[in-house]
Image 1 (tube, rainbow, N blue to C red):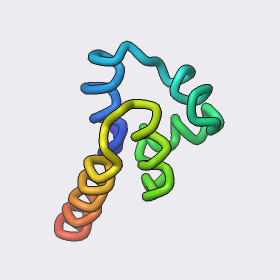
Image 2: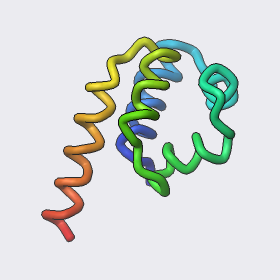
Image 3: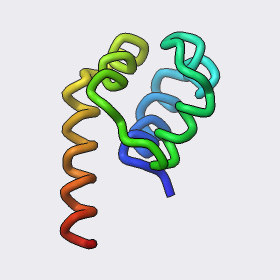
Image 4: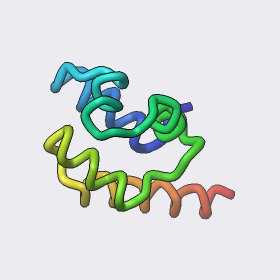
Length: 79
């Protein structure tokens, strides 16, 4: 399944901003593998990464951080 970032990226960023994972990688200097791991939920979205995505996607870092926090809280509740 997709991570919180992955879902938002696919729903908001790719469709509305017409940006691919490869373009995101190029613009923020991260490796494609790192982007894929975040999208797939294998790696946590850190505040630093959220700031990088804010610069590239023009979507506030607080949006990404809040989604990640809610996702982590949900995971703890569900177990």
